[in-house]
Length: 145
Image (tube, rainbow, N blue to C red; front, side, top):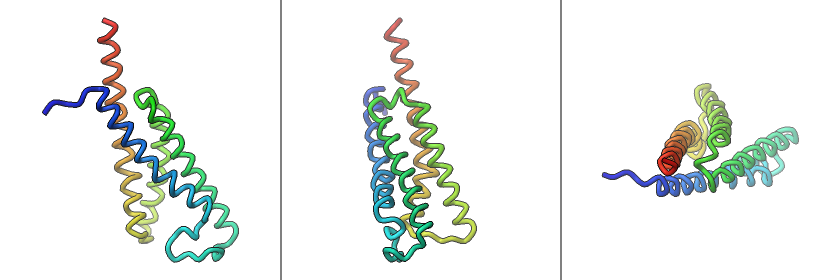
């Protein structure tokens, strides 16, 4: 099977990043607006004010990560550092979730799926972006020859 051209692979990666940023954008915005009440089993106004504030703050950070990912999509081949730092923040957040799981906190299936996205899909996007960036560098070097 023939591999995709650098431009085709770039388009696929751009689509994957655009789709991938929907989760932090949607759930980050929901968390900022609804607070912990967005979670199943948490009644609106039932959480202590400090928990509400902290949840909304962390949701804002999550939303911000989504915006940073979205900003990478148009020139994904040139956004290596930005993508890697954003991915690092997401993976670190996932390790916190993994720690909770190992300590006996059994989250819902949705949070387990999020854990998989944080610790598997996010690093995969970083590796894919590196491949696309190398392809564009090689194509540019060949063009200049």
